[in-house]
Length: 202
Ligand SMILES: [Fe+2]
Image (cartoon, rainbow, N blue to C red; front, side, top):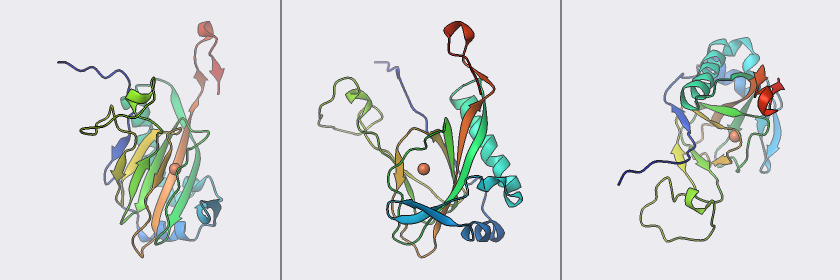
């Protein structure tokens, strides 16, 4: 039997892209973390964190991986621009509750410091439940019948994904804080087509 996948969602994993140096880590730690997610202040109020000169090299790398994901994997021909960038910090025992990235076409998460971490997706149903929703007994989990995915992440990794995917993390098990930088990208320029009445000038 030949199987043709009818629909799919790619999570882009870039392993060991850049090991953050002490200067970068200290810079992030000194940022003002005042956004409250799930009862703890873990997200920066600054949403253009990557514009700081200290991240000149890192921001180029994150941007180029976002472009690679959109161009090579999604095969979307439109251009993208970075619209938000922020940092998050999880001290021992803290985690990220499930959330989405509103305003993003795609997002990239960079794991600046991550001794323990799992990126969890939170769909509410599997692909085969999309059109007719009831419970199945599952012999072996695969991409057709799974509802959640758990992806182990380490310092230096980057993940790229559509911003609407609900995701969260397990709690940090270590004394060393877990530090991430997130970046949202949106389409730019002329998007869509006049003859389909979908054209947008962004
Ligand atoms: Fe997120």
